[in-house]
Length: 116
Image 1 (cartoon, one colour):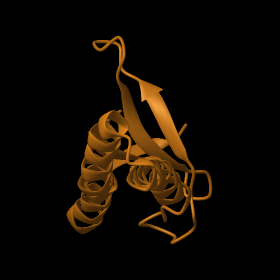
Image 2: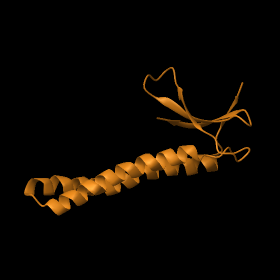
Image 3: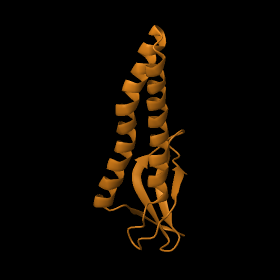
Image 4: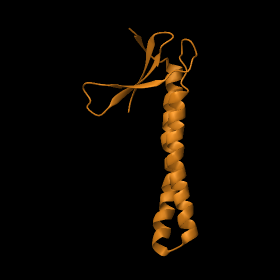
């Protein structure tokens, strides 16, 4: 049986900031890009329409890759090995899952305190 521990504060802050950056950066790039799509789709300016589409699609791809990379490269605070993410169901929430990382070497489940 795995022991469950909370991630240390310093690592928790770094992980949370990374998740926040993964959300905010595409919004900063994606919102103006969507504006270009909206405005230039109506007035027929084809080059700016494609710039907007490329910016919006690029920001979505960035968000997905960034989050996946963060989840795949999380290191166990105890042994410094890369450990996989696990989304554990929470009984009191029907659609939310707790984000945890499981180190099979240390037999520790690291709880981030965050939900999907």
